[in-house]
Figure (cartoon, rainbow, N blue to C red):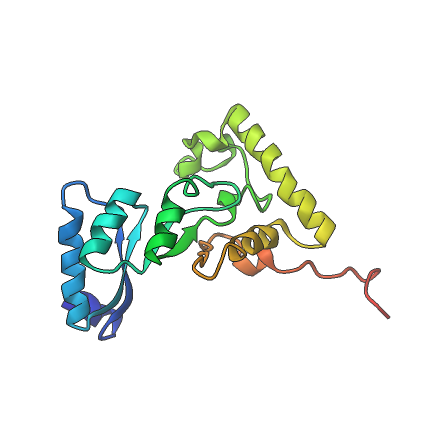
Amino acid sequence: MHASLKRLRTDHIDLLYQHRVDRNVPMELVAGTVGELVREGKVRFFGLSEAGVGNIRKAHAVHPVSAVQSEYSLWERNLEKDVIPALAELKIGLVPFSPLGRGFLTGVVKRAEDYPEDDYRRKDPRYQGSNYDANVAAAQTVRDIAGAKHAKPGQIALAWLLHRGPSVVPFPAPSAAPISKRTSPPRPSPSTRKR
């Protein structure tokens, strides 16, 4: 930890995540270790990434978990059945990654075969064949709502997440297109500007 803090040129980390649960290390040990770092002042808050309810509860019993990062959006809602209720019960924040549905909710998405060979999306079933077609069709609802609101689909997707409550803080990932290009309001054309 000392070397990391030195490289970061800081004396503490605000939010330290265990990025993916390691099945070979008991969650209680992870939480205990992070708890020690908190007591030493090297870390302020403890977070988990893509953890299930069982691991969230195990960790939280040893040291308070402040945030859980996991994929969640209008397009991917698998957390609603058990994870989100547990987070609400334990008063843990949710940091959704891929809030723009991996491009499906912005309309900026291509078929698997249209991505470079080394791009993970070439092997992801969501971008292949009839799955791709079904996902694009499902995301059309968001595009329709955006059109009716004179907004971009990405704005609608983020607004939906922000409306989920103050404990939900979406994390749009960087991409080739800056986030402002994917979510900022469209500029009026010269013919629609007020004179």
